[in-house]
Amino acid sequence: MKFELMSLPFAEAALEPYISSETIRYHYGKHHAGYVNKLNVLIEGKEYADNPLEYMVKYTNGAVFNNAAQVYNHNFYWLGLSPTNTTCSVALSDMIKRDFGSQEEFKKQFLAKAAALFGSGWVWLVLKNDGKLVVEEFSNADNPLCHNEIPLLTCDVWEHAYYIDYRNGRADYLENWWKLINWKFVSDNLADAQNDPMTGYAQPCNENNEICDYVDKMQENEHTPS
Ligand SMILES: [Fe+2]
Image (tube, rainbow, N blue to C red; front, top):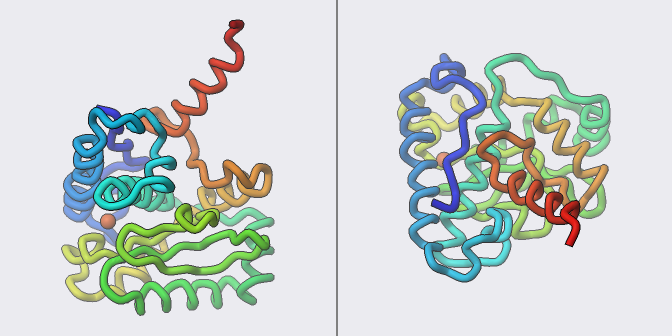
């Protein structure tokens, strides 16, 4: 198996009452795991199979792209949630005020785009190449990496993200999802992006994070005398 399902950064019931353990069991344990499994089957034996997930997202298409991007998007989604209160860095807070007017206006814009997105997709807080923060929505598995933009936060608005808990009440899901945002993760992504725009999209390392394994391997090679 090339790619592994990431470990959730919290317990299955930790996001209740806003996201139930039953939703996590299906969303993470069936849908997210399913994308990982399908991706591994699709890339088996292919010459590009040893590349990191970000490569698959940026340079493949069709079924490989769909499954790779869904793995990437779900990794980003789970890392962006926290069962405990977190706060924005001063830098993030200042940029939100500069580009949206206020935190409230940012929330309003984000949730309005998420509510209005037709069909399945993802809504993202993105750092654009001109240094501005914007909220962007993408259909199906499409994401900011495909458009050379830096993702900072995402919300999954596929029905499988909320149907068990909210049925068709996407707006209620969005209001409660907002309460779970891991602002430290968002702030760290911004800090990484500002320190190094080329790797700013990288997720924090954990033991199941393939991009970190890839970077570790590159660094090892650099430090191995030839
Ligand atoms: Fe999902």
